[in-house]
Image 1 (tube, rainbow, N blue to C red):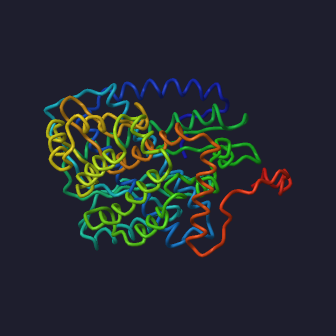
Image 2 (image 1 turned 90 degrees about the vertical axis):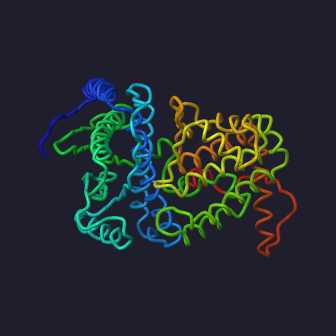
Image 3 (image 1 turned 180 degrees about the vertical axis):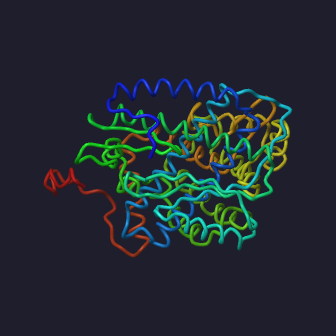
Length: 433
């Protein structure tokens, strides 16, 4: 590896971080928001397709049972890409230029990851599958980014696009991927400054390679554990819909039966999932009323309007919806029967204020996607749940859900809790668990 920059101290990393941040700001100003945003949404959806395939391999096909670290490496890669793409969307919206005369283009992008050093074989196999599905021809366009995952799995990230892609889309795509590589560097530098121990060395090389040398006894998983993220926390993260409905089983069935990618054939599975999500929250005493007080809209109306919008996106290429705002509001009014006032109310709700916009409105153009609709729906529900239920009430609601589940499956369960005032497990074992 030919070294371009090397930092052997946190001070050096800090100076480089300031320089790269300024470089990002200068480059972002040259991007046309109306051309860039649709491409970033396409890329985000391509990553979401990979996430669905990884979840299917992990939960249904049990492919990671003997190698949980490989699953964690893929999961971490996916989260990093989501995070940086969203930052790019926010920055280009704030600092890029907006040419409303731009003709918006959407093209198919396929995103893949190989955790094998001989990743070329995985790419060839991947292309063969795409060719069988009629998604690419004989000589597709490739973009390959070699990297080491979790500092121990050599492999690559790759993109496959059809050869006759729109030239403006393709040129902007390449520029965005180049910009994304620059965004990745502040993440690494920030980790060296704030998370890695003294003695860490960081080196940026040619071909956008990054090498991190850490002191003996330290591994990247230590950083995730610092923030409470590890294999166990990923698996044990249980939102309300998981423990207060049959959502988990329905979602596994969705993964099992879902055809490749997304499309109209999968809508019936999504409808069942949504019914379970609604049941999970609406069955909790007082929650529906509090939701209306909290957001100023009935929960039933919220679900119906959001779900109609999701269906309008789901069958599009990369599940992206792009409309003139007035036409979107009119179409939702016609399809749901709700007033424009209520539709605007739902459109104005945000689960992550200014951090993860689910409906992006610029001038008279509105854009969104399946993933952004799905993530923000859970966020809005969970924000309300966290505000409404104190921790003790959450515990009791969880107990009641477990009790119902046991009884429904033929087990005996007491009708109320039994308080135990002595520790059952030694403290050191409890802390390890």
